[in-house]
Length: 91
Ligand SMILES: [Zn+2]
Image (cartoon, protein in one colour):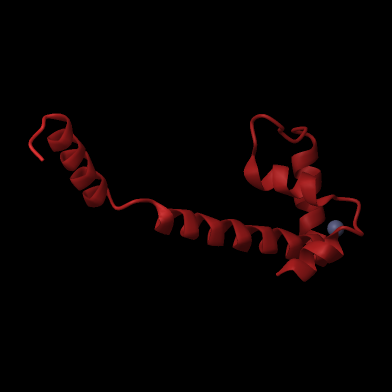
């Protein structure tokens, strides 16, 4: 996975620009004119296309991990109930 990203660094499209493209980060947007150029480049540069796939896989894995780490709503509800009972002196 990382090999593609490492290879891409020798290309003129940097990893940071590819990530900005993937994130569509409103705080650091790509120049709108750069998007079609980058997409055309991805269509013909196997190294950058591979790096984009690597970044997408990594982002997907991180999203799945963060979704798994999100607390169970039922457990949060039980904790709130316990805290309410403690505050009200019922425990
Ligand atoms: Zn490239």
